[in-house]
Length: 372
View 1 (cartoon, rainbow, N blue to C red):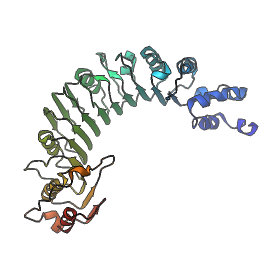
View 2: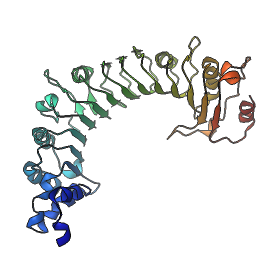
View 3: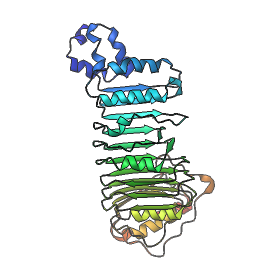
View 4: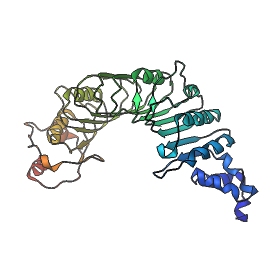
């Protein structure tokens, strides 16, 4: 221990940074040399577990205010009801983080009362570069919002979110580049708009949003789009103005041809496409730049979708057939018969170089497709 204690402060703090925050704090009892080192940790993580921890709230209340680092690089609060934490506690701790110029803030906290967790100062924090929120309610966003440094925003499984608050937040992040929003199983969301000139990557998850009436996306700088949409109900959707889009992931569940066509229309100029769909999209689409295609075959109609994609992708070089990660093929439904196109697609005659098929079992239908 004496040899380690003789190391420079910066190196000791670096060593402590590899430990869980509570363990790093506990080193203060080793000796006077270690008493205050933890206070300069750049990253702080307070995480509750599946075991009741009523003392965690008091621990954070005692230690966070005396933390001395002028900048908190990352503050992570992953807390559940077993930690006996209240919304007012989250509010207070976030306020402390903002006063220390926090750069990355991550909050994972479920509140059944849907109270507002955040101080108004969060929405004007100049230092914040990354903000990740899970389970929390995004309501009553103040009229004064300006996050000049925010580049990454993740909103996952929001308990409550309204379109007005979302728009108020997004429209005041002038350098936002990476946005991931998961509004699945949210019955409060009726409409939303995403208009962000600076955005480069967008991941949008809409599963079982039964009250959603419309959404609109306008992102002229976007390079990557991920759309996961599983809703029986059709509604107005507009995805436009993405001239720089290079790669897309489209997963449309249930039978919703209107939404699928809207999504396909927005990604016809991509170079790389991953697609999973119950339906075959309509006629009139041309993938003029598509070179790399990943087709998920967990749906029974995937093979006819393959025929359509081959016909519409004259420059295709790489074709991968597989199950997308976390997707499962339900064998009860079997395979829909392969409807072999009457004409050989241009890409099979001129451009296709690589063909990979993961999970090939050699069934009669599969053999027909492979031969084709």
